[in-house]
Length: 49
Image (tube, rainbow, N blue to C red; front, side):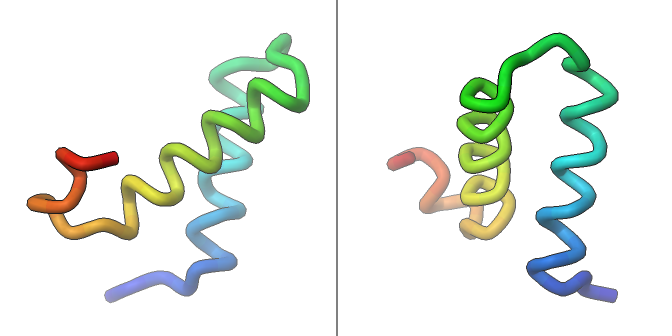
C-alpha cells in the first residue's frame, strides 16, 4: 500500500524531530527535503541526486 505524499512528508518530519531534537529548523528542512526526494525517485535515478 502506497502512502500519500502528505503522509510521507509528515512521517519524515516526525522521525527527524525524534532523531535530531536539537537540530535547527534549517538543518531539519534540508534533511527532510533530501530524504523526501530520495524516497520518490526510482533506484536508477538516485545516483544522480
